[in-house]
Amino acid sequence: MSLPNFTNDIFSFLDEQDLPNDIEAAIILGSGLGGFVDQIKHPNVIPYEDIPGMPVSSVQGHAGELIIGKINERSVIAFSGRFHHYEGFSFEETATPVYIANYLAADKLIISNAAGAINTSFSVGDLMVIESIIRNNLAISPLGHQKHRYQHHQWVPKVRKIAAELGLVTQLGNYMYVTGPNYETKAEIRSFRKMGADAVGMSTATELFEAARLNLKSTAISLITNMSTGVTGEKLDHEEVKAAADARKDDFAKLVKALIEKL
Image (cartoon, rainbow, N blue to C red):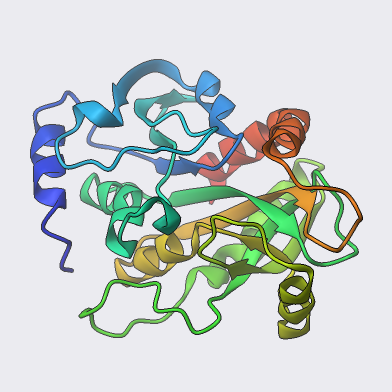
């Protein structure tokens, strides 16, 4: 499978590091969820800015670090900070963690994000397992690659079963990808709901599509951190995202640990 040229420098740098050759999982941490890195034992922390060719996060709540270490004696890599198209990155650049996970032969990719609820039966703090993506006809995948199936939904039942075994209730839903960075209007949210969207966010979609192209087992979980515009009368702000993430950080960590072991 072809990878973009800018990754060559990244891979050359990683080849010079003392990295494990049996990586069980790669984890992409969304807004407010970077605290999960505290679960990683014996961490080797590499700032993105120290990696040649690596994009650097500019969004609040994204530390911008690659962490390599152990969780329950299993080797993992975690990306504390991701890249968004609205920051000026190409769609290929937003998928950089996926390319690294593939290059390091990770067995699975666990993607997380903070999302706004469109489904009125959802509540702030819910964990939603993403079943499918709505792109609104946006060309979110890098151009020039052979067509491939969007296939990560095949692991959704197992993810929800693992969560249920932990006593965690999860929602199942469709993730509406928007480019951002502004929040959506009331009219847009009403339209997205009619299209079948349950939650909306500004990341994850390209990561999942590129993981599918590379045949990398993947799953994605949205933490519902706010109700979308017009669902309630309240104003949206980043502090709400952080508060929701803090409230569910233990359950999120418990679920990710189980997925590392059992997915």
